[in-house]
Image 1 (tube, chains in turn purple, blue):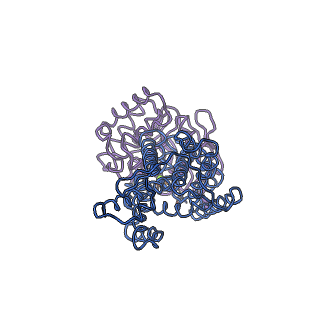
Image 2 (cartoon, chains in turn green, brown; image 1 turned 45 degrees about the horizontal axis):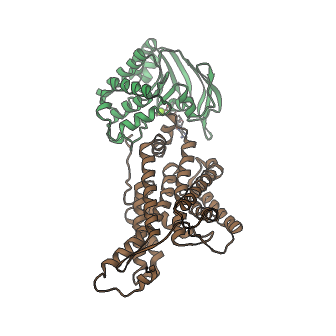
Image 3 (cartoon, chains in turn orange, yellow; image 1 turned 60 degrees about the vertical axis):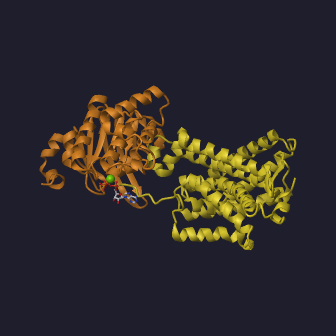
Length: 235
Length: 314
Ligand SMILES: Nc1ncnc2c1ncn2[C@@H]1O[C@H](COP(=O)(O)OP(=O)(O)OP(=O)(O)O)[C@@H](O)[C@H]1O
Ligand SMILES: [Mg+2]
């Protein structure tokens, strides 16, 4: 569904990605793990069009989307839930969800998507009139995912959904991520520092280190890998 | 019928002083303030989406008056339909001009240092002012009477129909703006872009279109301000935008830059204060008061009256 080939990205003279390649099959949950500054966020931002690659290509559903602007990439069904959630803080929960359906015009489809979001995150329905900036971190994460779902994505990229969230809510959010994948058939690329959790819910994993993929394989197998255990899984 | 200057100079009678004097000044102040408010809205909206002060905005206001001046020659004088037609033409013309300025001058600077953009804005401002002198001439012109005008006297209180017109038109435009910003899809997108341009792109907003729309909207309001100003102060010239522009900028900062209701409130307050100072023994300081307010607000409440420092949860 998505294939990234030899992606190189620089910030000025600093090189952040040095030839990253991976593929994500339709219907799967794939995770990209790695420590601070490994280049995970940079990878997602380049795929979604917020950053420009220096070289390499991003291919989505058979189309080269490397040089498309971000708003055209979303239009093709590739949605990015950014690091830090980036909800529209002064807008209400309802307005945030409406913005998620910005590219849709069919009112019936929008209503259906909204019901779907409420079925996954009932709390969003309770908080409809509340300003997004006043939600808790976990609720903001739900809203950010809900906002992305409003646009009918085929492919969802999540950047550290567990970041800064109470442990109790983390497991809820991960259950929902699996549910979105199972019941709605949305392919998911999950970026995480919490490698344990990410390997548990995903089928396939890539490990990124200072801008390059250093390891990849089935999540089950990687969980047992002694080297990976030592570095990312806390011994 | 009495004229305004007579009424202001006339000895107040025991009966209607000082209330009528106060009401008179209040009315004059509000109608001047409504014009500042219209201009201030453009500064604040552009700041909202791009985080810089578009110094050329005051000259778009001037161009609005001149479009009105030329368009006014093609409609019969002193008719409401003619006046409104001139108003609409000036608003459309300036909307186009504003979008053109953004497209040609500011868009390619997106993402560069604010200082570069500010200097460019000053450059565009000078370009418009001196092109104005080339095309319109430097000598002031008399703005035609496009709207019918009468004065209504209540004792020593004189209300001119032009003042009412200013307040009515400005109010309607501000209500319309409020509806656009808070009730329409493009308005919600404007607020989204101003809160987080990256997140807006990620839900499919084409930020270029929203920014262009914002310039168009702000410039149309400035043009309306230009027409309403010229109706009440009918001598227009290519540098006429400088002072009202600066004051509107102060009004936008006073209300809280980036805050739409704040700009409206700041404009009305500033116009009123200025008019009262002008009518007092300190009238020589009428222009200085705006800048005294600016310094005061920057020192004591830099976020403005309605602005607040929002702390984003991360
Ligand atoms: N805007 C920027 N300007 C310059 N360098 C940047 C910028 N953003 C990221 N970098 C650098 O690029 C590298 C990769 O950063 P990136 O944010 O992609 O890492 P990450 O894997 O997402 O890390 P984290 O887990 O901490 O979010 C880092 O060395 C970082 O310092
Ligand atoms: Mg990151």
